[in-house]
Amino acid sequence: MDIANQKCADCGIKPLPLELRARWMALELKNFDHIHVITLDETGIPPYPEGTRLWTQRLLEIMPEKFDAIFGGEPEYRDTYMQNLPKDIDYVLYDYSRTRYPISGTAVRDNPFKHWDYILGSARRHFAKRVLITGTESCGKSTLTRYLAKIYHTAWTEEYGRQFIDEELGGCGEAITQEDFLYIARMQRILEEKALKNANRIVFFDSDAVVTYYYGHMYLNTYIDELKSFIDPSRYDVVLLCTPNVPWVADGQRFLQNDRQNNHRFLETMYKYVFNYNRIVIINGGEYKRRLEECIEIIDGLLENNL
Image (tube, rainbow, N blue to C red; front, side, top):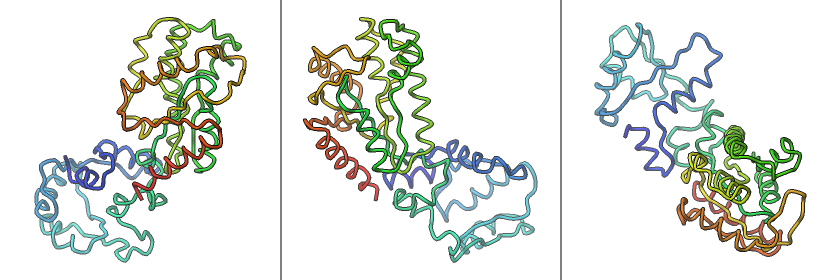
């Protein structure tokens, strides 16, 4: 584990692999042709200041050509890093008083949501909390997803399977095939990635690959094994599983009205088989307003843990 990832672990946030950090920088600088992103692997280098000699040695090894200056925000680096570099390289101190950017990397890692505005746009998706809202037919999850996204001023996804049946099958779910379910799973993941790019601290997902797997069985009476590759139990911070104890609403696509409770137990078993029990929260309110209040309480707690 390099120094940056160790610091992330100490702060309780997800690791930041070197390749991921390089991707963020490359995305932010892609329109600056005179700037090139080069990675320096700090594996095996002791923490600062003991590792300064090895760090500068590795820097000189990876640089493709001679360079003239190093830019930094800490004046003490001049006496540590620079003593191990050629004398003709200058150290340029930038924004030492932090008047332009009144923040440090340590402060952002300690409290990413509080300092959200100082996180690069390309990096925000990594820190955003991911909430999956799921359930069987007519349990209110789609409405909950939209309401919560509006309340928290952030992005969300809709359940693509419903959109696919409407737009590609003319509402005739009986015409669906195994290949269609695989396409639905791929598109659902693409929509999630798009939503993450616009996340404001948190993002809400309506349904996932487990739901697609579930409906594959319900529609075709078989398990589509290829869908398992889309199921990722580490992808979501919390799973809000809605019970079907709100009034049934017919919309032309729903057909499982007579066995709602058994279907819910079947789907719940699927989630508990692949997901960590601690991440699954059952939303059981019998009224839509109460369900919304339950979700807000859970989500506020999720956000406060990183504040």
